[in-house]
Image (cartoon, rainbow, N blue to C red; front, top):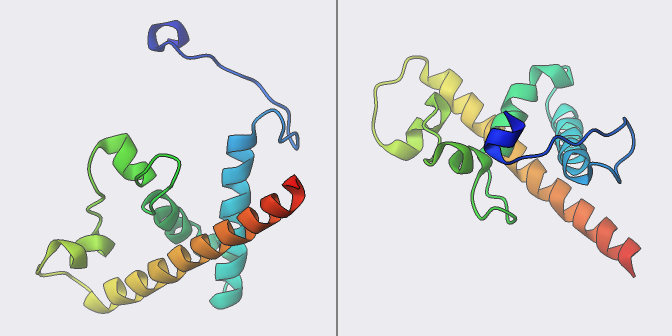
Length: 127
């Protein structure tokens, strides 16, 4: 399968970011987002992992010039919590949708904050 797709499988060890810096950076960003959301909202971080994942996968990434979902599927996400962007629809549980939308907005803000912190940290240590 690797040959057919023209890809290579690279193995790396745990806690060795030099081997797989892209994955490590993504994990660091998600951890930072989860930590911020857990402080912002009450409850356990695992209650919000789906919302954080959704926010991350549907946020614009400078490296690919679009959201990961859009890159993978070739279209913008049309999940129920994005229906307010599509137009008027009859939605069951509008309060739930409203609360979830608000949480996704906060998660996206936390993603921006995490990226800004990580960029300033990286810039400071490159000099």
